[in-house]
Structures are given as C-alpha cells and as structure tokens.
Image 1: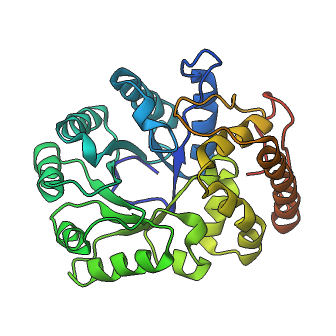
Image 2: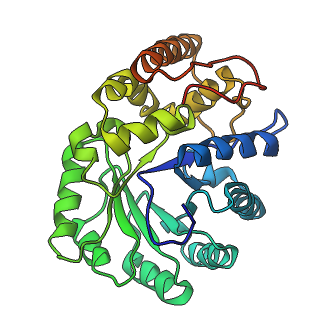
Length: 306
C-alpha cells in the first residue's frame, strides 16, 4: 500500500524505538522491525508513546521518520507522531512530515489542552497532512472530539481507554455528526473481536512481536488467533508494556531491551511470565495458522512466526 493513496491499513503498529546499550538508536534493528511490519502489510506509527517519543530529541524524531519512509518504500502507510501538549512543535513536526511524504500525523492527547481544536485545525489548514487524534485513557470532554470529527480533511479519531465503554462513547459521539469520519481503536487488548472489525484500523503494540498474526486477526477476525494472543495483549496493556515489548523483541533476537523513559524495569517474575506467554502464543499460532514458528533463534532469524 502506498503511503498516500487515501486508504488506511487494518493495523497500524506503534513501533518501538530500539536503542543500543549506550542509548543511541539501533538503526539496524529499527530497519528490521519496520521491514517485518511492511511485509505483514501493517502501517506504522513511528515514535509514539511505545517508541518513547518524549525521550527522543527533535533530530532523532526527524531521522526516525525519514528512515521509516525509506525502509517502507511505499509498501505501507507511515504516520508521524506528535503530542498535543507540544503545541507549536506539533505543528512544526506536521510540516516536516508533509515535506517527507508521510501518510499522516498521529496526534496523541494525554490531557486535553486548551486550544486542541484550534491546533488540529491549523495543522490541517497549514500542512494538509491528515491528522488522527488519539484520546488517551478516556480523558477529555467528548464534545471537543465531536467537533474535531466534523473538521474537513480530518484523518480520524482514535480512543485509547482502559474502559471499553469509553471507546464506545467516543465512537457514538463522533458518529452523531454524520460525517463518516474514520474511527480507530487505540487499545487492542480492550476490544472485543467483533467490535474491532467495525473500526477503520486498530493501533497495535503487540504487532511489534507478531506482525502477521495481528494483521490476520484484525483483517479476518480469526477467533483462534484472538484466543492465542489474548493473554499477551493484556500483559502488554499494563504499565510495563513498553519495557516488556522490548524484552519480547530481545527474546526474539531483534533488539536490546534498552529503555530511555523513566519506566519501572520489569522484574524477573514478569520477564519469565512474558517468556512463557511468548512460547505458548507461538505454539498456539503455529497450530492455528500453520505458519512456521521461529522465536528466540538469534538475530539472523528474521522468519519469525508473525
């Protein structure tokens, strides 16, 4: 899928940013992770919360987006990511994304700031970049999102709430406008499978680990795949989700578990639980899909069960 052909893939993977042990970006690992997503047909959101956006320097965010567009090479849609709290910086990054040829901007809203509507409208008018506004954890007045959904050229509205009822409330509020604004689910582990298929796309973190399986899950609604992934989805939806994602990728030989965010490192018990879940999930998916499993076989093994 080309980046700017107007369509959205069923899955957007919020890609992690792999780091070397000294804290610098591991570009080799980043390229491999993106290639696996493109091969699975997933879009990518580069430098999201999962990618430790707040810990990245401006120049690094630019370089990651440029690298992502080069690696994906038109095979999948690439979204730039900014935070609504950044204000003018978000507008500036949207302009950079436009100049690079990104397929849109994911605007993460952790706390609804004053002027959110004006900011989104300015981004749309001044850059022409489609904006997907993602509300975090059900925070913020629904009315502002109803108004945003009616904006011309808005890319869509997404909800990332722990309570699935919040996702439904936001969806209902946006659909009341009658504008057919694309709606996205931002929290995969809280979404019932049948409901997932009613959304334009699902933003996934688990797809970092199993890109092909997650793509199949939200494209065709395979209950067997859902059952295999459910426990892992729930585990990654917790507070240590980012650090556990990196441990999982490390277990698969794809990157180091190095973090920049001031997160609590998973303890030995959590890591062991993750390893057991990865093994069980891999076995289950192998049985369910007939695809060869390749977990933890070292850096040279890129034909993992996805």
